[in-house]
Image (tube, rainbow, N blue to C red; front, side):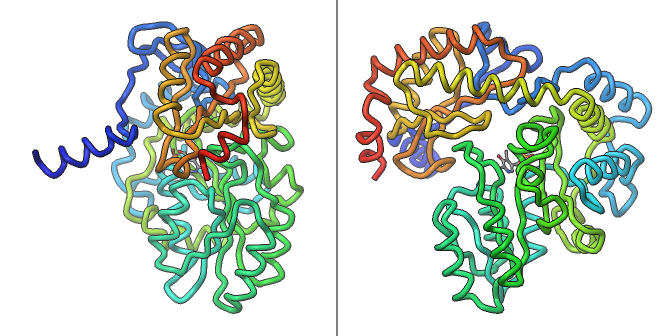
Length: 398
Ligand SMILES: Cc1ncc(COP(=O)(O)O)c(C=O)c1O
């Protein structure tokens, strides 16, 4: 057996082996999955914009006008009008002086964190931050102080210990796997007090929370105050890519030093044009954001009616804690058999022992579909003894 085959076997033994499933046709509240119609409950296309006619149309038109690719990095010859137009609109939407596009959220986080913190400095990172933030911390070669989830006391202690070496506090705005919101007011206050920067990842906040879907920073009244706001175009904005909003000096610095910006081909113009069309829809139709919140409440309430706790979060991300990976995948398959698709989430995406189903609602879901889904999730969970006793699940995770 080859070494790779052995490692694959080990993943299978631990219930951690993954495989691709195939979606036929475009994204939507219902999709064809491996040839079957299912209700989609695990997409980040929160506002149903990935398949909106205006967004598709903008992408198609831009592809015809500007071509399929940008041909080079932005700093060589790949900087095109769709990029700069989108940057201006994103900065205005978020209440910042400037925005800089990156090829993806992964590239934005790794490039930005590594540019803003260096070898002799300390980065402070919430223990439940997204993997792309973790990788950014690693790439920076700074010392990383991982503070307990949302624990400002712990963070404050770390900041005091780091003294002058404190460079950056970084956090998800809405936590990707748990759906809770970071304590941004306290984090901002601590950053100011200790003279370090605060960076917030709004991948799951933009289009979902805050006034008109402007995100968690705007919701906390901190637009322009938080030093660096990162967001993605591949989730609520239905396209692909990412951006960082900051003052002009900071984006100029990132443009010059963030290696994932400097050494990577610019987004295809059609993708930037799709992002812009989606942003325009978000600005002109804020009711989509309200519908998303209402749908999240519907699902959460309906799950509670089935005796399933979802950790009291209030966003469109509704986690159902299971515990071990194999049971999470079993539950995933059982509900899939009944026509609902919510991928099981396992380590390393979440900590060992905290595997879960992560339901995400879309503004385009119908209320009755969510209620029906909760019923069948409840019945499958009861069959497996999931969710009946939350303390038992917590013990399993401990
Ligand atoms: C919190 C968070 N940050 C960053 C990313 C990465 O963004 P992208 O998919 O554009 O690489 C994701 C999701 O994938 C995410 O959930």
